[in-house]
Amino acid sequence: MFLMYVDESGDPGVNSSASRYYLLSGLVVHETAWKTTLDRLVQFRRRMKGVYGLRQRDEIHAAPFIHSPLHKMNGIPRGHRLGILRAYLKELAQAPSIRFIHVLIDKQGKTPGTDLFELAWKALLQRFENTIQHGNFPGSPNPSDTGIVLPDDGNTDRLRHLLRKMRAFNPVPNQFPTTSGTSRNLPVRFIVEDPIHRDSRHSYFVQSVDVTAYFLMQYSIPNKYIRQKGARNYFLHLTPVLLRLASPRDPLGIVRL
Image (cartoon, rainbow, N blue to C red; front, side, top):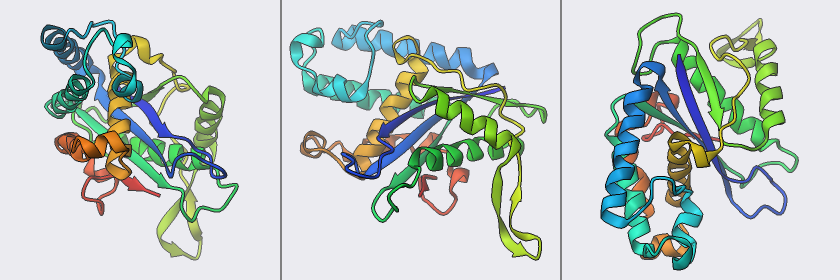
C-alpha cells in the first residue's frame, strides 16, 4: 500500500483572498519503505538537535517556524531556522523511496465561485490514483497495491465527501474526443478508505509536506524575508524526488491549474 501525506499552502478562496496561489503538496511512500523513511527523518531531527538545539518534539511548521520571535523558538536564531529548513529539503531529496506530487492553482483569471478546493484535490487524487494503477511509484511492484490519503487536519468533511463521490462518478476528459463524448466516467478504484487526518504535531511526514508546500509557495511568490535571504529556489532541492509523470510538460512535474 502507498501512503500519501498531504498539506496545503494558501487558501482556496477566490474573492478577497489574501493569496494568489492555492497549492497542495503530497508525499508518497510505500508501506514497505515507511519505517526506513521515518528513521531518516528521526536521524535528521537528532542531527538538528545536536547542531542547532532543535528538540525532536518541536513541530516544524514552516511559516511560524521562520517568523516566530526568538523567545518562542528555544533561542534558535531566525537565520539558523532557515538553515534547518534548507537542510530538511536536502534530506528529503536523498530519500530514495519517496515521491512528491504538487498541484498549484493560480487564482488570477479564475471565475468567482470556482471551487478551488475541489479542483486542486481532484487533480491530486487523480494523479495518485493513476500512478498507483500504472505502477509508476518506487516501491512494491505488486499490481494489487492500493493507496490511502493522510492529510493534515482541516476540511475533513469536504474531502471525505469528494473522495466518496469520485468512487462513484469521476468524469475524466478523453484525450481524443469521440462520438461517445468528451469524457469518460473512471471511478477511483485504487484509493481505499476515507482520508485519515493527521495532526502535524505528531507526524514528521505531515511536517515534511508542510515544509515542501511552503517552499513551493515561496518559489512561486516569495515574501520579503525569503527574497532577502536568496531562498526562493530552495524548493529546487527537491528535484530528485519530484514525480515528473504527474505533469510531464512541466519541468518540475507540477500540476498547474
